[in-house]
Length: 295
Image (cartoon, rainbow, N blue to C red):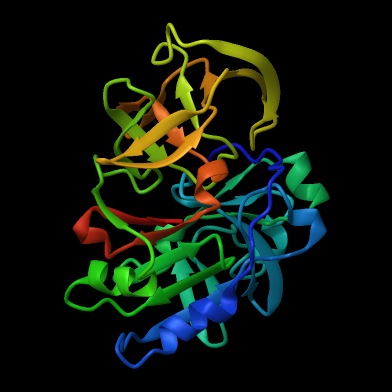
């Protein structure tokens, strides 16, 4: 579970281009489901939000690659119970994606988050759990979540979707479902572990990693748990390297401490300030990889 602060920049919606790519005969992919991001004003700034059906009701969830398992806020729990009087997450939630795909999603109940209650958000969905045997794509420029039936080489399918971009295939570190840890670096510093986190609005590194960098200003961000913290950011934009490629130049923000996921320490997080120009591909779980295609 990660930050859900407001994001000032917007992304262009190009669903026509995406659907044309999916329909191209040369690609021959089978689309499993296709879910647009919510465009409700109340959902802006929480990261990608999808409106899905659960037990015949429309419910809104934030797509958060930092959540493991998926999370339901306590205010929404009574209406999401699998059966009257039973606990919400005794059995997986039956999430309907697209027109006719229902996915069982393990979940936990957490205390209600005031900002989620105000925006009528039911919780956070872990995209890694939505199609663990297929290729899940979170496409920020086209504002869509979709999944393709995995072929022999899912990375080839992913690259065909974005022929004008350089696709990256990254090896994930560790076994955590709730953190997509890859190798990366900020500026000219040494490579460290970086979490690709759709729940975090800004790209950040631990203060100790940025020691010696020229920092200025501060900004307060509110995490999904309601905790407020103050961040600084670099005076100048820094190249951000993920794997062996520089994917953006950004004013990197600091945070007090490094993160920990399943016992593994990571120094940085790739936030939505960079992701907004990217598509993220999550191949079948056994491959332990993640793909990026950024404009």
